[in-house]
Length: 463
Image (cartoon, rainbow, N blue to C red; front, side):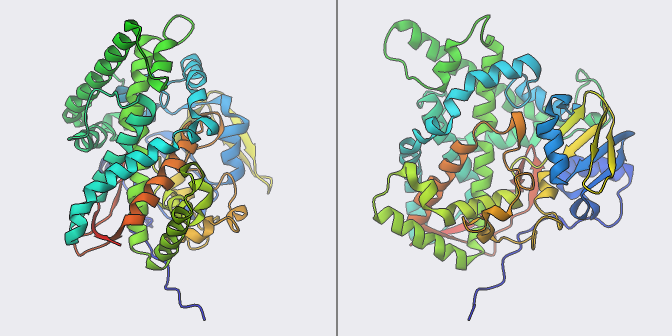
């Protein structure tokens, strides 16, 4: 007899049934864009609507997504509103650069993030995860609550600092999570001026409070670069890491100083953020799914008892990976992928319908709605990690699940992030159990990434 409980339905905005007014759109886009989407966005393969005078095509059909992101990717530039939000923060970092700048940056960084190279970071990821886990030892003695969102931001930052920068980032972890929240919470919002496509030189009043955090991050990057340059000039030992790689290719045939700074900021300020948020959502969903948590704990105990090398944990812990990937589905760190056709384009559906995609208009691929879409997922709003177990993965189409994007601009750190997540979860869940309390709230808001509003409080106890 199957006595498994009903799967958990994590909190998320209910699809709208009444279209919002123009004023309400502005308010919702500033407050939380995830609350904007109506039922058609979760039930139709695509839809075209007028959004502030601009035709907007929202893509859910996997064939249409493949066309935009892969087959005809060269015809799709970054959407202007997206750039108005992100470029003030990241400038010509990998997430926002276009054209030749993006090509040079991507080519320069690719060797660091090949699957083989990423596997070489496993021991460092393990060590930093074990060091971080010690911080929960005292709270666990008393069954105290911890803000798991803040904790995961600190953990992933420390892993990033150790693996890509050899621990040489010019700042510690004290207050780092708060600075990230300030940066993305204020600078990562859509301002009303963005919706009106006002020129970038017009001040965005809503972002004034985030400027201090942005200046702090820029200062961190500048000091980090100066310290490593001095180390390289001294003739002594220099770590062969991501930071050294970037500084070595500075010059007319590589990246400019500003481009290097922008990419370092991208990885320090945002590169770890996606994994941090996904880890927090995973621990929350697992806390609400005790049946699957037991399976994860048994798997972790077995693999660690066998003394397996952490480089192999990603393959040896399918339940841990499945929980993380299901959290990525429900709470995709990048909830929207925004594009604009450079030239007029068309796409023909299997039923013969021809969709016109005019140049300069907006094309959205929405992992947030795609991952919860009724056409492509069974019980799409529920946490069912079993769908990502090896025996079920073939049922998931390549273009119905896009936590890392697709095509030429697919996330360069996907393998790094998956390995990091499984190692971190295994270390934490080996020692501790996380449970919800009466104080636990978890509401998703879009602030560049899909963040939990005011964090997630979980009780931590020793296993």
